[in-house]
Structure formats: C-alpha cells, structure tokens
Picture 1 (cartoon, helix red, strand yellow):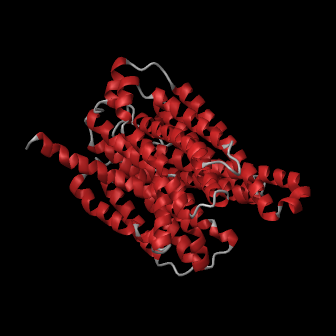
Picture 2: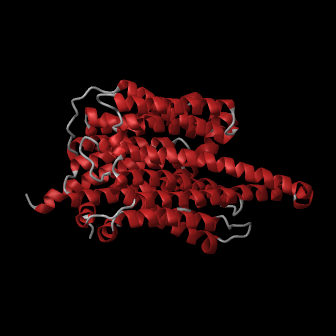
Picture 3: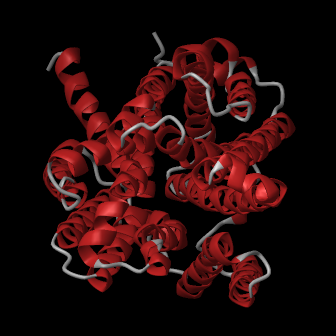
Length: 487
C-alpha cells in the first residue's frame, strides 16, 4: 500500500471528527435565529422561551465531564457513535415538536448527546493519530471547525428559517449525525478501554456542581444575582463542587484526576478558552441585536454580516500549526485574547450612524484573528504531554471551559447591559417625549450593548493574564513535537 493510500483514510477520519464538532458547536447558535418563529408556532411564554436555549446549555455543560470520561472507560469510538445518534434522534424529535414541553425535552436530550460526542470527538484525535505531525494537522482542522461553528450557525439558522421552516434547524442535524455514526467504525480506531470501576459518586457530584452553577448563571441573567433562586442554585453548585474536589482527592479511581491541572500549558489553555469564549459571547449577543435594531438588517443579512469573521477565523485556526512550529504555543495564545479585547473595545465605540464597512468589519476581522489564534493554540495545549488515559478527560475540560465560559460570560454581560440601559433610561426620562419612544428605546439599548462590549474587552484582557501566567520557556524540541506537520 502506498503512502498516499495510507494518508487518505486519515484525512477522512479528521473530517469526520471535525464535522461532528462543527455540528455540535453550530447548534449553540443555529436555534437563536429561529426563536421568534418557534415562539409563535408553539405558543411559548416570554419566560419559558429562554429554555429553548438554556435546556441545551444546562444539560450539555452539566454532563460534559462525565461524557468525556465515559469514552475513556467504555471506548471513545463507541461513545462517540452513541452521542451523535442520540443527538440525531433528539434533533429529529425537536423538529416534530407540537408543544413547548416536547421541544424543551428534545433540547435537553440534544445536550446529553452533545456532552458525550463533543469531548470524545477531540479525544479520538489523540487515540487515532499517534504521529505528532498527523495529530497537529488533525487538531488544526478540529480547531477551524470549532472556531467557525457558532457564526455559521447564525447564517444556517437564518437560511433555514427564512426559506424552509424553523423545524429544519433541528431536522438538518439528523442526516449529518447518521452519516457520522455509519462511517465512524470504518474510519476510526477504537481506543483501549480502561478496566477500572466508574466513579459514580464523583459523576453525580460533578453533574450537581456544573448544573447548579450553570443554572444559577442562567437564572441570574434574567432575575439578578441576588435572586433567592439564583443564590440557591449557586449554593448547590459550589457546595457540589467542594464535595466533588474532596471526593476526587480520596477516590481510588477518580472521575477527574486533579493532576490534569499540573501541566502549565494545559491549565493555561483551559483558562484562556474559558475567558475568550466568555468575552466572545458579547459580540454574538449584542452585535446581532445592533445589526437588526439599529442598522435595520434582516436575520439573513445579519447572519451574512458575520461571515467574513467566520471565514477568517477558520483560515487562521486551520493554518495555526505552521505558526506554532515557528514560534511556539504561547505567542498565539497570548495574542488571541489581546485581539479579542481590542476588537470588543472598537465595537464599544459604535453609534446610531456607524457604518458596517468602516466601523464594524475591521473589528470583526481583528476578532477573527484572535479567535482563530486562540483555538489554534488551546487545542494543542490541551493535548500537551497527555497520556492515552488522560485524553478524554483533558478534552472534556476544554469543552467545559468553552461551555461554562460562554454561559458565565453571557450572564455577566447581560446583567451589565441591563444595568447600563436602566441608567441611560433614567438619564433620558425627561427627553423621551422630545426624542420619541422608539428613538429613546434604541438609545437605551445601545447604551447597554456598548457597556457589554467594554466588559467583554476587560474579560479578554483577563485571558491575556491567564496566558502570561501559564507561559514558560519551551524546550527546543517541544515546539516541533506540537507543530510538526505544518507546511
């Protein structure tokens, strides 16, 4: 068999894994554009509508750690297939939902499937690509899919909703997931199973901890940080987290081996992913509203307005290995959050008459370089000196950082935005009759969005600090090991 024939299945395996990650990340935002149509069709109340997104987020975040560990114990390929098939079935059911309860249940089941498939997909790269050159190439493709997913979701959601139906934002996942499950046993090797008893108590505590904290963040965005329900959820979550840490320190076969944080590159990668995604959510959330409410864009035009950022981030993440080979992991990991912070600060200067081409597009392209550099560096960092036994766990930690970071960021930024908008409303109270209610409303919203961008920029700068704290002098051979394979 020739070398080209050997390489071809490897390429297909990479694209299969990356497609799964793209499908799961895309689903975070593809539903957002369809929410108004879903509300009208299924008669959601204003308070229950948020659960179309939150049911997925809560379950996905709560089960990620357990999902990643399940692949280590039962086999990553097997759990990957179970995850994508569950995701497919839940998506199909969601497309046929006849009432709000059925759709929310389907979204929760999607979250379970995603929590199994996403970390096992990344871990499959470690178990299928032992050659450092091939692994780094695979990680770059995976990073490009991750960087593009959320923005592509806005475009795909707008296209499907406008030209077909909101139901197709769910139906579209089913054939993709079935194809992935069918070809997985053909293209992917099964990982070696760990013959150890599962830490069921640790699993329960991890779910309680993450779900409690995530629910507290979700609820606080709508009801405030001092709401009794928010405080109670945080108490359960942080109490569960404390109990989980104590359990993992004493368990013979822990769910989370705390030594995973001993490597500074990996820990820095987790922290940077958490903070960059927390900051990034201000762009997706506030700029989407700015496009439609201030510039008058349709949902479809709004989705395409993000497309240059999506393409640029994909290209940068995809070609990251050649830069990592030359300069190491930490320069792009430090640059990523810097660029995100700069772009968000630029967006915080927008006004009623700002132009897309001169004021917004440059910020989006800078943001793309930061997002691409972050994904290109964090995924290799998470696999630094990772053993086959630890690959699923480290993969899950990256996904936990991404998911919880996004939820925390959105909660904090939404709270800041509401506070700033309320202050602006009080300032304009005397002038509302003169300005007109509609104009005043836009000015109030604009003040809130701009405050959200500024806080997002601060969160981005915290990512710079995290990267700097993790940086150390790399040994001469380490860069080559991580970045071999870049052209």
